[in-house]
Length: 536
Image (cartoon, rainbow, N blue to C red; front, side, top):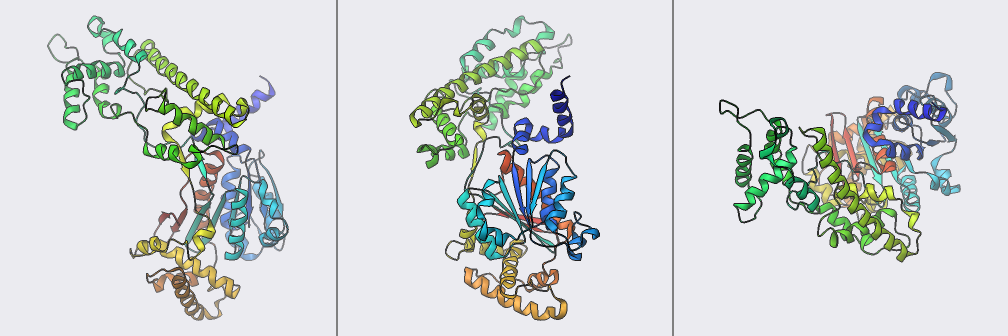
């Protein structure tokens, strides 16, 4: 075995669990990604830890703070020997010990100075993670990254409260990995090759062994055709009609010498799968919205690969597909002999390949029209897109500027949620108010313990001013405001660790373009162990 093969085998073993989640393609995307962390806080380093372990390509930490006793107390990636040293340097050193495959460096500088003197520094990253930034600096960073089209993930641990905000203009997802999806079998509109194969199999001339191992897909189509013959060619749609089909299928089970039905699992499978396999073939609403998107309808020379492929599939649906998306080409597991199962599998795969070839030809036409080389989109990308065409998603987040501005803030949505006295969104409001307090006083409420009661009064006034300014009419509970003063802006490691797991998960979704990120705000309440996701 060559050293390169051995290296690949070792890597497969090392990353075995995650490869089962996002596959080699996702792992390759992760290993070529570069992430920037602003401020090596407890939440920040926990997030980065969960990216270093699965093998992010590289990272950089931007942090002008020194290691203090407070940061040592809540951050596992710092220790007493480093008191007074660069926090970015120390955190980088420990994080790099976690995975030898990952490269990392640091900049001992504040985000404010970096944004002022070298904003282009952030342009080279796949994603930027920001923690514990002032409101002004965060908005500035958000504007710059929005212009660069670099995704931003804001992570915040504040006492028992957690907050994560995703910020990107557009995020297309091909491999969305839906938790539950009906198989794409086209029983309501079977293609000729499948029909021909099913017609070639005669149940009445089979041996008992062959009869009991006929793929249930074959049984479904045969008995579906019998049903249609007695129902004016119509498919069963209602629960009652599908029940009639199920009983019809049961009549095909062989009887033993005593006249009792044989135990034929394939017939049981056919009955159980009537509902899931007879789902009408159609284009899902989410995919229709992708096709209707202006970015799909009006391609330009700057159009991304995703939108070119989406347009090609849209044109396929309107023409060769006759209203249907490209066939996925996979069939479910079933009780069947290997020969006939493999044959059935090959029929579906061949049809899927035929559809992908049609889409590829349409991609070529679009590329020719745009003056782009045909090899700018790989054949494998076309096949992957067609295989996942049923699950395409495009997520668009609002910018931080839109969220924070009075004219574009979703005040009515916030009011609606605050109408529920148990809503965790109240902590989003008081956290925003605490940030406003910090910008005015240069410290967080309760950060100094000399006069907490005074800070409570000041934070109540700041909160009242903030909600009035934003057009929020709901009253904010006093105990929630008091909680923010009790925390004094501190991080609790348990909360930071939880947020680090959630945030890293979202970063992986962003850089691999797999699974669907939330849109766009996540609030965690560690007091009750509850959370809320909302678009703001």
